[in-house]
Length: 70
Image (tube, rainbow, N blue to C red; front, side):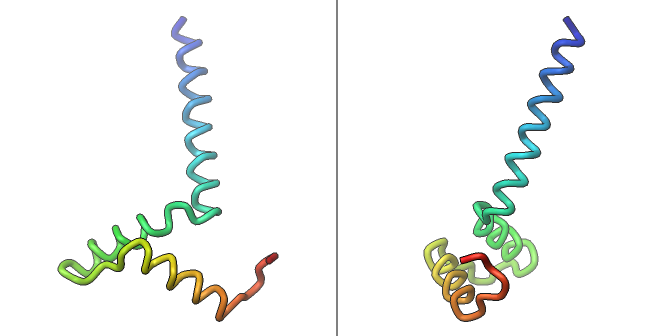
């Protein structure tokens, strides 16, 4: 029985790692990462709202497309 729990835990951990990776690649955690960084590095500073952040990010990507597929 203990071996079964260990295998299930490994599958769960693996799935969590895959989920984290996909979220990072897709940018789903970009605002949370930005806000945490701003609060840690610039305490007392102004943190953009999520709406402002995404508008700025999309405007920057449109202005500097780089090597994107679309």
